[in-house]
Length: 109
Image 1: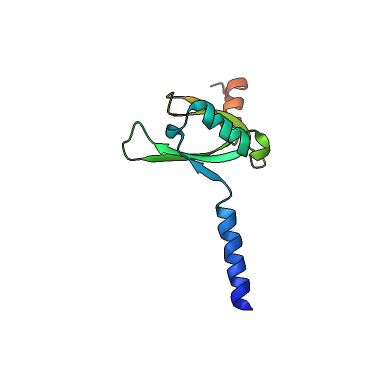
Image 2: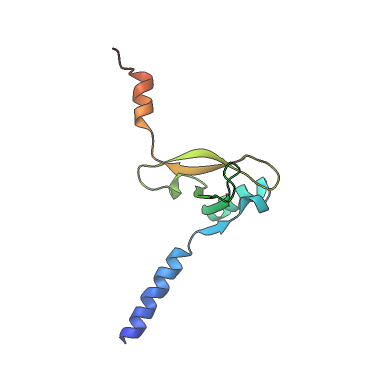
């Protein structure tokens, strides 16, 4: 019985890890990248850096803020695709309140 419970737990962990689909945007058109994100809600895009050869880059890209964690907002980002160097997508980020504060309440010396 313990073996069955252990196997079931391991299957649940493996299924949860596979929840976000992974794609290489450089093998897809920009329209297809955006449509895939719109259809699935959140995906992981992985591609090679153009500045540092051999360095893989990846992030989680989302359709809207419902796919962000609490306290995060959706922010525009760009990834390379098969037909363009900068395909517009969205990522979740924590707001930069320091930037807001510095802009509207500058320190005076």
